[in-house]
Image 1 (tube, rainbow, N blue to C red):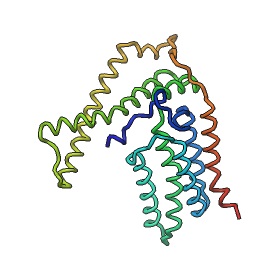
Image 2 (tube, rainbow, N blue to C red; image 1 turned 45 degrees about the vertical axis):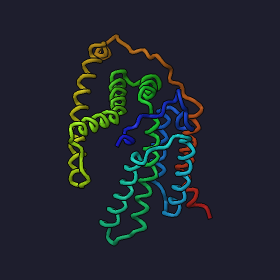
Image 3 (cartoon, one colour; image 1 turned 90 degrees about the horizontal axis):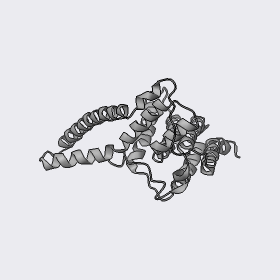
Length: 251
């Protein structure tokens, strides 16, 4: 569970691969480019070969950082559910067409999950505010929410330790395990809502509410440049998005 909410790699201490050097905007834009390419995969053969190339490229781009399998679980679930539903509900049932639909979805969902692991909330806020000129108030709210998401793993571990100390840990029974995780999830939700209220009050006390008034503008402490790594990532994503069609047209 903690791997699912793991924080983004620390670029200042241990920059990892091209994804660790790219900015949040290029990571988001690359995800949308791959989505356009994935939804237009022409056939299963081209999709399978392009998916294999994409997997190798993702491993190279991630460098020394290893994305936890729990982060990839949504992509695997998306592939399995889309494939099964397109096969089961089709008339007549066509397994190849169903798998092709699942491959199209997985082609952009899995890279999107990997890219999201490298998005730093503070850097994203800097680029949204400085490069896209989005108003400061929604930018700061987004950054605050993403930063709280990064702390969910620590909150989960704290709740688990406190429950074990009180003798409320689960047994080996599947029913006990299910009840344990359900109660843990509910407790984590309640704690997140309380912390969100505290953060809202703290931000208002520090004058963030003034950003909604005319004449008040937000200044940014750090620059948000577009780096060469960002351009390289976009070029790679464009190449990967057209790769299925290149394989399809190849003799």
